[in-house]
Amino acid sequence: MPEIPLVPAHWRFPAHPASVRRARHAVAASLPDALRPHFGDDLGLLTSELVTNAIRHGACGEDGDLVELVLWPADGHYWLAVSDPGTGKPAPAHPDTGSESGRGLILVESLATAWTVRPRPTRGTSVIAGLSFLQGG
Image 1: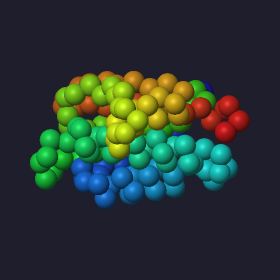
Image 2 (image 1 turned 45 degrees about the vertical axis):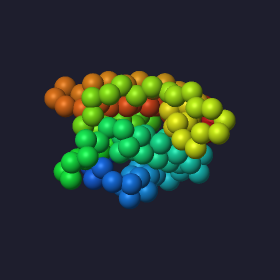
Image 3 (image 1 turned 180 degrees about the vertical axis):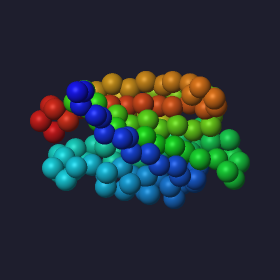
């Protein structure tokens, strides 16, 4: 009989800045206790950056806009998908040294083992990033 996979953790938050903290805490709380000390900070930072970008750049400004998160373990990674209703394709910026923003996806690139942007089948965009938990934390 095949091994039955874990059900992915799933959340929806309003596209509002207060949701960044809530999302970070929800994701961290869903990690197994043994992984939190070695893995929780990076996953929390990744969550904060992706949710912040989804709110700033992917939300359409409507009151009902939601940011959706899905977290699941597979193939030695924890995969995080952050989805928003926008249609843009996020890409790393190249800010100058005096810029106060624009480094989020550069940080995602440095933290994640792999990441990509995918259109959603019905509406919106998902950014999916994976962090390896087999590399010794």
